[in-house]
Length: 192
Ligand SMILES: [Fe+2]
Image (tube, rainbow, N blue to C red; front, side, top):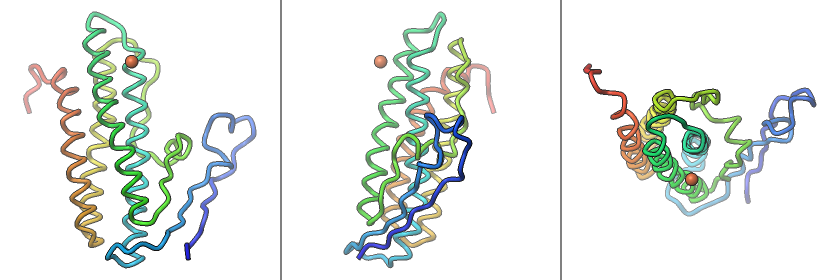
């Protein structure tokens, strides 16, 4: 038997709801029975930690795509390619995290509107123009996403789900490689 519950978002004025997370955006916290050797409580706690990272991956992916499409300036072409590389690698995490959630019996709350509500990644500045401003802004978001993966690994380790903790360690190593591709544009003369 599945435990079913739905968390409603706070209501917004009708003028604010078009295209934004609103009263119709719900988080499904249903947990299905699985044979995975964890208690129901361990599975539910681990899934809750993972939902925030699923939202963060979707948010970071869309920000990298925004940068890929809209960057201008002398370094346009190499940055256009670099941002697409970041988007491609972070997008892989979306599916991996979503399916780890469902493996543990949860429902992957991964629509764009759910992600917009849940993500803790900083808001992207959509009014930027110049290349290095895009690099800086995206590095802030990817850095935040990386920190959230490290935190997820530590939290899940405390819950007692070692395989899921290791899963997030691996995602963190991959995301930190993307952070390196961005930060290498910024580090000339910037020694610790
Ligand atoms: Fe493209």
